[in-house]
Figure 1 (cartoon, rainbow, N blue to C red):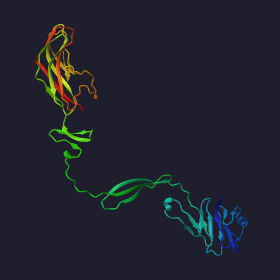
Figure 2: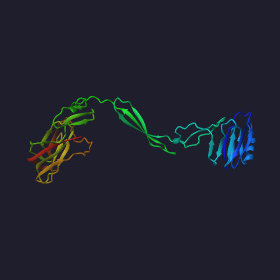
Figure 3: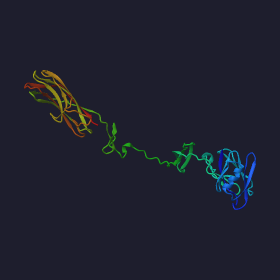
Figure 4: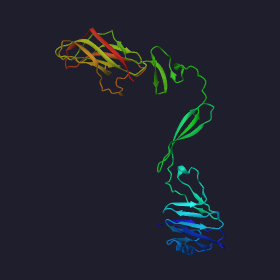
Length: 359
């Protein structure tokens, strides 16, 4: 087995001699001129230790059988400079060695060696070809710094990393805070620039998207109105009798009526008598209805909420706008095909309207 290394000629190659030989079982040397050729250098060394080869021309690449030490001696050198071949991949140099980049070599695993025997220089490349380093992982965090102090920055290693693994650091940045401001005046909600209205007992803040302000207003709850004045009457055939009307004052919100009413009706075996409540007219928007019994002579009919059209969340049917007044009419009607006479008694009549706010 062999190992390969570089040998530089020493001194002035135009004159003088040097010796080269081996130490093994015995020491043998050969005297050589400074201008010796690689072929003659190899012949001289191979005559001592067969298998030795020399290539190149200053520097020479000398391949020496394992187990031998090549000694090159220049009379001008303070001592012999030897390279001992210990194995196919390990060498020991007896001479001066300078490490040219020893900074942090223990953590990087990389160093460059310069071998400096007197009268010559030999350079070796980086001793270890490491894996390409991974970029570090940085975790940033900010902490407040008291007012008046300068900003700070520091880093703390949280992981050293390794082969193929990035190191990790936490970078802490100290950010100066502002001075504490003076205590501001006491604020009153009702006087804020985005609040409108006059405070009153039981009022609440209601947001208005139309003008993007908060408004002070009473909480909207259903209000009940009832009628105490009724009119009895008679009808013939298919006709109606208005029993009562009830006016509702303007409200600050849109609303829809919820009605209840009753009255006593008298007819014949041929009549069919019902009750109804209409909004803003005796034949206006239907908001209530009570079904009688065909052919009943005397009966008390109750009228409940019953709208003339289906109502959904966005429906405007039977809706009274905010700020508008309304009148509701309570009527009796005969719907059978007859000309018989019929009548309305108000002895126990009732008529109530509940004003239901709409969102």
